[in-house]
Length: 425
Image (cartoon, rainbow, N blue to C red):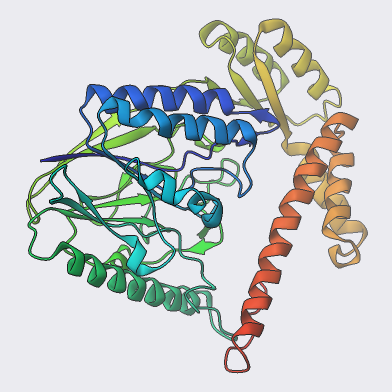
């Protein structure tokens, strides 16, 4: 019997509307250590997105390595970590040789290395793991010119399936005749997965991160359990033993209504159905998304301050009058009430800004940053908020441009037989 704990999407070091989540992450990791000890966990799998950015802060690294230094004291003998799309695989793998001496495996960078066999003290295999990280579209050679989005992700899916097939072959070779269970990891958007919809439009995105959906069958069959990451909402996909565990805490206000969990999986022999137990994760930091006109928001802030002291709040103003001083008024009220108002979203100002821009000139006459600045001006954002949001906008724009540059470079490296992809807008 092997007790496996499945978790993913920690996003250590994330800032939420300018607020550090480091203490939330610290509390979550302390709780996770307790679960490993109390439930006698043999192995822990982190299915991608350990960090929120590729170059995490010193604080984020400190709590990560602090956790790894203590996890074996709980009795957990094995840890398998796979890089996600937010991670730098090279950064995570840099100390891999040292970590492996403590039973901590960081997977990759090739199918042979991703075929991981966890052994008991006598050297007998007790779990085989296809520890597959996030697979970039460019690495799967899926980008070609003049194809539809559906064809694009079908090509990507075939590349991912071929990769899993190679990992499975390497794993079976290493496992030999062992009857120990086999599991796989994955960090992708599976077809049919429920994605948190946009809170304003109610629409679910067709891509998550930079990925479109691919069938969960790309991971292959005959696995005793599949640990998925990338989608933050916990759920089964295509079977009871194929699951997203979700993020252990909300990573945006659109996720505040999602449940948070890790999944305890008790595995026996290969081919035997596992016992699966979702374990709810406590909410370490109260988060509330409020909506309504000015009076409704004032009343809601008062209620939240009594029911959830210290909560982080996003207020979505849906009234019909402009309320030019609403940001400052609600911020002052929240401060007096002891809650932290992180953002006020003004739907009326947003609509008017779009209408004014559309009536006056074509968007093609402006750079994206100029359009964003005009929106901030029309939304009556204060100077501090403008600086903060503009900084975030520039970071996002830089990431988009870096991704486009990488795609162009990859296409050039492929030579004339691999034409450049069309850039999506």
